[in-house]
Image (cartoon, rainbow, N blue to C red; front, side, top):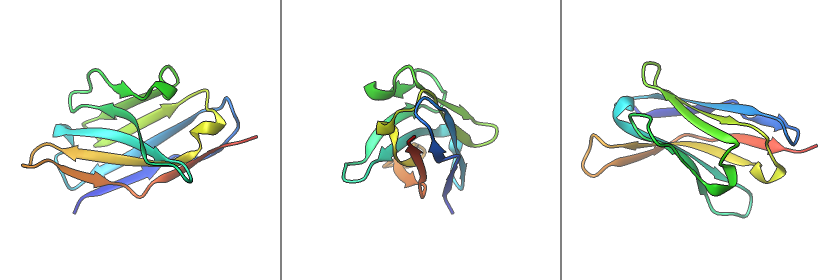
Length: 120
């Protein structure tokens, strides 16, 4: 079955860094668009970053541009989110998402989330 397992979250001070990872299985990872979302308490889920199957032209929400980098390794079925210069407003539950493009219609899968807390 499809599994998306996030890791790498934790507590970090403002200005610090974290690297989130998402291990995928059960679908054709190399032909899927991978995304990171986040949801802070009391707020709607927000798309943070997207990377296509080829890894070209990643998308970032304006608030993380220049600080976060999304990457993928199609040989290991993993996607990462490198987060630098973290701010308290980055505190949220971060979710890995897969948009599987080998089906009609495309299917969406979600991980269970990993908590990121930025606080001094």
